[in-house]
Length: 253
Image 1 (cartoon, rainbow, N blue to C red):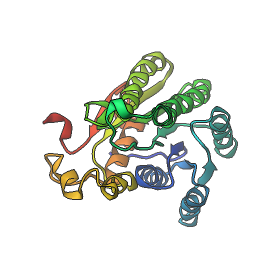
Image 2: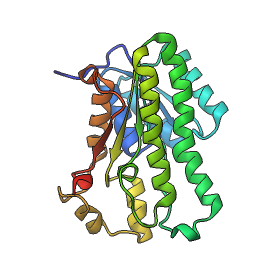
Image 3: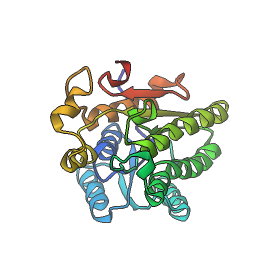
Image 4: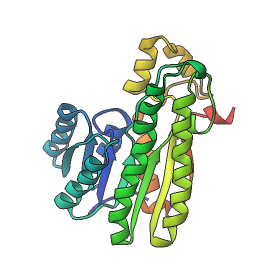
């Protein structure tokens, strides 16, 4: 069965590149009107214009998802443009350099929590307010394999990603009876600018990244996007509060 979002409205944060952009494109190709949200004004406008030039409905929204007023405005702009909100992928996030827990700066810990965890709560807060009015909707939060396991040097990042899964499960219980499904994806080592930055910083080589998963290669942004669309679609209507690992087998070893 083909996944279709014809007549639906989707919102994707962190949509200027990587997994966010891949997901926004797939939503558009599947018939949805899409709000592309990112802090990078130039890139998100460019991405939305490219979709519009291809005949799709797209809206660029510049937003710092760690700021409540901006997140509230993000939802208002989306609904003003398209009339509703049916699917949301809360993807925006940042990485943190590998640091021994005892040496982790308080400012860096707070930065990661604000961008990687608080932002997901803020996005869900205002997405759910709109979906609650409609009595329907689907939300997918982007965690990480770091939400399922621990790795040395990643205490703050993994704490945030574990937190996303806790919020996803608790919120899913609250909203399942109201027609709203909430799930999460846990991407592994995906070919994105974030992983490229890790390689450039010397944290890991590209070859070492590829060897982390039994499949023996990096994942692609499109492979994560496919999982997100499935979780938002009518093909997964009995899937509630799950954390889907898209990691080439990393977490089963």
